Image 1 (cartoon, helix red, strand yellow):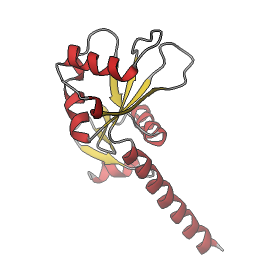
Image 2 (spheres, one colour):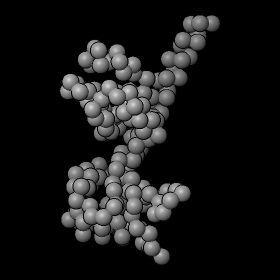
Image 3 (tube, helix red, strand yellow):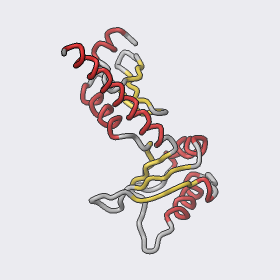
Image 4 (cartoon, one colour):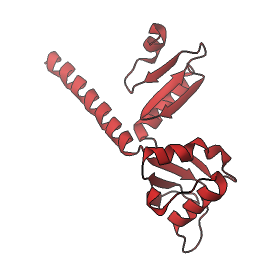
Length: 163
């Protein structure tokens, strides 16, 4: 029975890892937008394209924004998810996002499990910097060691081993 339990736990972990990767991969071309102004009878797609053109000096075509919608939230304006046509378009926008004026903020659309991992790594105080990039979570230690961290990795072991 112990052998079955060990095997079941192993399969469950692998399924959870695969599920998280698939979820994150499906969000690969998404941008989460915070503090985007809300107004009456708003055309979100057109307003987003105009803001990117004005603030970031990037011209997006209508077809570049595959989908756009607001998320339910307790505060206003509620955040938005913008699904862009491809990763090149997203990269172009994200590369210059620091040029945004006002309070509007663009971030990657990170899965809940990856956000929990990021928070856990930050709370561990073992890393100077923790970030998400291209479907993975990374951390840099004070000594400069940079690691890609998985959901079930033993952080202390990975840092000690240096890989």
